[in-house]
Picture 1: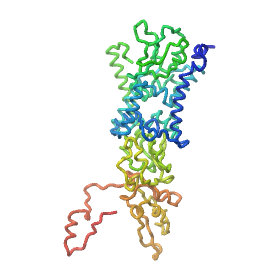
Picture 2: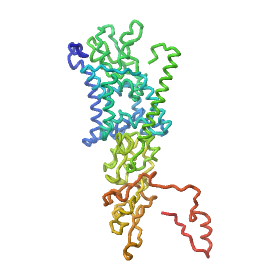
Picture 3: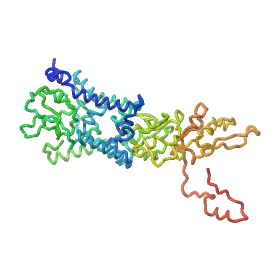
Picture 4: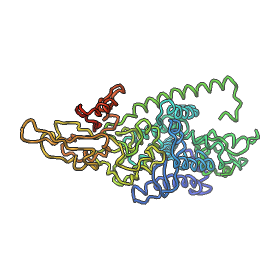
Length: 279
Length: 245
């Protein structure tokens, strides 16, 4: 039987090493959710609201820039709290990597990662090829629709805010949308939602174009061509220039803004090719 | 993206056109769906200070901070296919009405101004307007003394008054009919919550549903300047200058 992705890394460095960033990432996703749930469940209000807009200890506001710009394009100029909040969030993701939101914060990622894992373990290979540019078209639509219709259209559907809001405030029939995404990722298109469709991911990707924290294939000379990074990476097209660009003088740093700094390539690589770096 | 690769002009035009077309299609789908999903159930009321429905939908971040600020669990955040558009706050007065807190905690909690921070006196709130939706089931209008809507009203004698008239069925009994005065009603929903008939006979409706509107060309004689002049003439009977309500 073929070895599972990351087998060699696990054999050489142990389970924890081969999963360390995955575990950290899950802890980050879950603890952010739990922070929001402490209030409603235990009446400990460290943070109120949800990912769309929140306030820490009744003092520091945070506002999601994607939602903020939708409000702006629909013709509403938000109040000071939202402006402060959006500045903080933008600065954070500009520094740490735009799509860090996708892999370290967004709750839908746990769902789509589960679908990807099931695909690998069950050997589901059906894959309808979609352009990775669809998400930009959707992103454009998310900003054009409110201009034309003067209301925030995408937030009627947005599965990301729907899931986070649903976990805190009650999901209602929202699970139908999430099931659809899960099944789409599982049976129709590999990494279909996060990698191809989600306009929110596309938006955070754009923030990340100039972000400071990146992954680099600094030890690419040690690459033994096992291919595990390609198999585990949700956006495998970002790897090739950095990993194999030595002959074309392409620097080893991953510059493609589709990279979500999830760090799974770092985990699964037995010869330790990849590492985080500052730009 | 295209940065690292050389793209021919033709390919660039094809790619851009594809993206533009896809964006157009997506816009119409998203917009069309949202237009459908935008309608609220007539019984879904907005928190105090909410902008008009159209402005509210463009201003609300769907964050739920107002919901968490509400001490009485009145406000709920809608999910997909709920009574109100996805993610927006609403309350169902029959279930839990607005308690009209003096400090209105839900309003300052709003980070975007979808709830107008200018609202500082809860009596000025306009969450909706109470309407006697069925006169045939109202106990008072049937000649009984229920009075509960009148008694629970936080702006009693202004938003709801009991108007005395003769009961036509039994000449010597009176009917005390509850009458809602839209200008004083805050839409808190206490009357609907308290109404003892199986289905509430008085319901709070969103203002857009509850209020009529005259064209501007109607001139009400008691509001015209001529009425002022006429009233100054000593030998004519006086017009009642009080505005309706």
